[in-house]
Image (cartoon, rainbow, N blue to C red):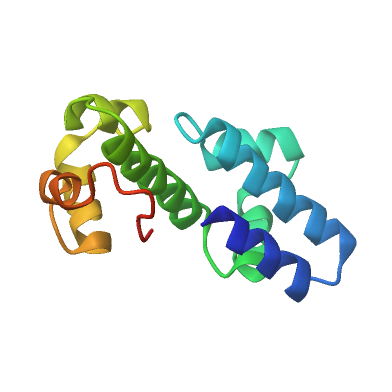
Length: 129
């Protein structure tokens, strides 16, 4: 989860500037996960893509794409378990434009399809993310 990354950043990055950049990145992903892009974040922070990418990886252990994907998948799981929205609507709601890509990424992470995951975890209060 993103909060795990925040704690990791606070422990592993003594440099305040890098810490601030990492926290800003995690907050940006948390708030804008549907449309977030590394390019937009670079523009907001006035940093080159190369510099920002290195800072993110160094401070969180993940690259921007991995952090964004984790957030989107976590949100999709939340929606699958708490709503009756069709899976295709959930995919669009979390920011994926390609349904087959989402299914592939989801299956890699959870070792089952979204439909099977939903059936197994519907209305559970604790879902392992």
